[in-house]
Image (tube, rainbow, N blue to C red; front, side, top):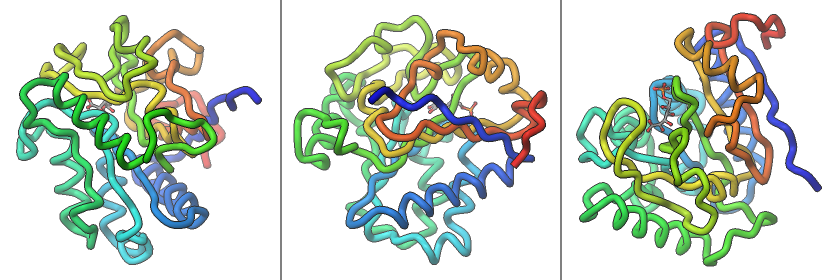
Length: 248
Ligand code: 6PG
């Protein structure tokens, strides 16, 4: 069976986008038994979603003790640095909800190097998964949130870089970012990000129009190379996709 093509949904604005994303998360969680794994992203687009999940009705509805939180990438900066992806999710979401500390799995940004941080995170993911090989029939994650940068990067997978071709490592160090903020990164690789029941891109704002048009035309960009063993969904708002009339 081939991989399903991406499904694009355009919604009215950034608030509707956050609500639509939260509803998708709720539906996935309702359909899952036992333990769940959610992989968060950095960047500005998911911030409303994080704040929304920390407010009612989601705060009360989400089974916090069953959900484990991971990151698709992070900047190699301390957690209290404003550029930290972990720090942003903690501030807006995790500090505000009853999540057990053991369910939070940040990327090790205090490791000696990005390579060492990547090795540590890979070991943590393997231990959580319980195997050294990802089985497409048993995805690592339930949901992987993704964003897209103006240059088409996603997670910390930048255009033209060797990391795009990585098929063995689950996590890699990125010594030099291709776009601001220019700090070293640690990122999951495509096969690891793909190991999910749903990959959900969240794209908001007029500064994403140009790159989104390139994505829609099938340009070879990291964001268009991303795939999922499960569903691949792009949720975008009208500012990012003004030519679309099929607003949900
Ligand atoms: C990162 C992100 C990255 C992000 C895009 C979009 O750490 O930089 O994970 O992949 O999702 O750069 O970010 P914006 O929404 O801020 O444009």
